[in-house]
Length: 348
Ligand code: PHE
View: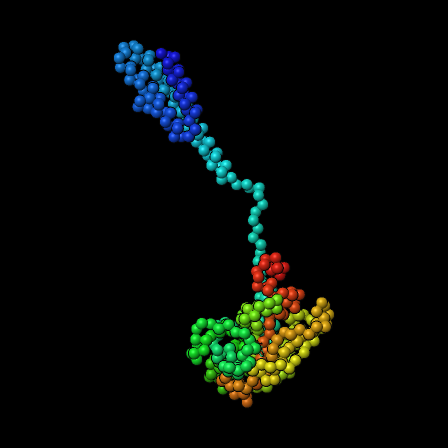
């Protein structure tokens, strides 16, 4: 009898040890202490015994049951531990791995140039204005003395937008910042409409511009900065002074020559291209074109709503991308817009 109980306890221990999962373990348990388990069957058989025998037999069976339950809970713990262990292993974190660095960012080189331009012109009393990149035909061309079908329109290969303006002519992605001349003048006049006399206009308008053009020195999106100074007695001489002062400050060099080369723009007369020449350094001796400029055409002054007999002055449009290339010695414009972090990191 005792032997039989011992052997039941032994086989329960073996069955528990063989259970690989909690579910298998519960199955094994049922075979011994469940409703039809081997130990349960033995207990049912006790009914026929004498009181004396019931006592000793009951005690022996209880002992065996206790032993089985101990084995069961030990195995339950072992399986739970193993499961936790496996889970921890699967989710393991190697705390010795080096961290992923977030590098500090920096301003884009062209943005740096824009900031410098704004600072330098602000120090000369210029306002800084911003305007739309999707422009009406009138602002981009007609108001600038460049009417429809005028041959000068082909100076710029313009992107047109599939949307017509008031005049039935499609909007365009502005091919230059010059539409800001008339836009700013209109806002200026409105602002000062109660004044006895409209004060002079002194403004720059930096921003994005667009042309159908793409190679190492042209990008379909590029930057320009317009300048306009219009007053009672503003002359070409003032343009020379302002622009020379700007270039010398921007390039931090007094050793810089400027040349005003005759040119043509419909909105200025006379017109010039402005070239600069470094006297030392890797670019020394070469004339480099940095801006178009000229005395604002009377027709444009009229389109601004001002009297060309009273308001006279100059405008210029320069290329901040070009200035950035010259300042940092970059030879391919596309590098500015590719977003290659190895290039941009150098300006951080
Ligand atoms: N808008 C001209 C261009 O894009 C530049 C310019 C601006 C010329 C102002 C004269 C006066 O080429």
